[in-house]
Image (cartoon, rainbow, N blue to C red; front, side):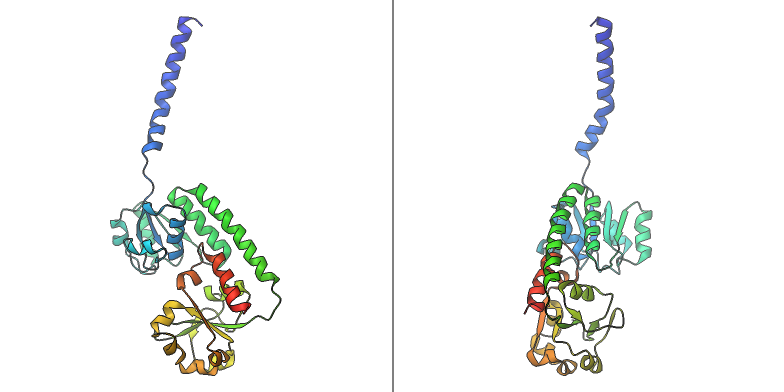
Amino acid sequence: MTPPQLRRRTVLNWAASATLAPAVLHAQTAKPPRLVTVGGAITEIVYALGAEAQLVGTDTTSLYPLAAQNTPKVGYMRTLSAEGLLALKPDAVIGTTEAGPPVVMDQLRSAGVKVDLIESDHSWAEVQRKLQAVGRGAGREAQARTLQARLDADWAGVQQQVAQYKGRKPRVLFILSHTANLQVAGEKTAADAMLRFIGAQNVMQGYSGYRAMTAEAMAAAAPDLILTSTQGVEAQGGLDKFWQRPELALTPAFKTRALVQMDALELLGFGPRMPATVRALHQQIVRT
C-alpha cells in the first residue's frame, strides 16, 4: 500500500471514530429513566425486573414488595396531582387507565413526561401489557421478555390444571369490605374475572360493577363461600366482627363460616404473582 493510500485510510478511520465517539459516549453515560409507577402491580413488576433503583415515586396502592412502602408516595391513583408528580422529575409515569384525573395526565405530557397507561380489562393480556410497558419505560425490554416467557408458561400450566377439574363449581361471593358500607362484586370486575379463572361461580350475576350488600341479595345468592381481602377483614375489626353482619346470616356460607381471605393486591392486582394466586385459590376454594 502506497503512502498516499495509508494517509487516506488513516483519515477515514479517524473520521469514523470521531462520528461514533459521541454515540458511544452517550450510551455509556446515559442515565436510566426516572420512573413513577401508579398501581401496585406495576410497581411490583419494576421490582421483578430489578429496576427499583429507577423508582422516584409510587402511588399508595404500591405496597408490595415491602420495600415499595418506603418509596416517595404521590397519592391515590385516581386523585393525583401534577405538581406533586413533576416535583419528582420523572422521565416516565407508568400506570393503568384508572390513573387520573385525566387533566393531570395531560399536564404531565405537556411537561414532556412520557405517560404510558395500560388498559385494565381483567385478563392475562393485561398482565402482559403491564410487563411490556414497564420494560419499555425502564429500558429493560429484554428482561421483560424473559420474565413474560416464564410467566406465560406458568399461566398456561395453571389454566390447564383448572380446565382438567370436572367437579362441581362452588358458588362464591366476593365482598369488598374496606369501608363500613360493604359491597359485592358483579360482572366485569376484577373479582368476577378471578373467580372465573379459578373455576368458581360468581353468585352475583346480571349486573356489572359493585353494589351494596343487602339481606335480600344475600338470601337470593346463597353463596357456599365468601371471598374477600385481608385488608377488608381487618377493616371490619377481625373475622368475628365480619361474620356479625346480619346479611351474612342468611347464607349457606355463614353456617360453616366458609371464608377465604387474601391480600388485596395479590388477589385483584393482576400482576406477576397472578399464576401463583390462581393456583392457590383453585386448590383452596374449588378442590376443597
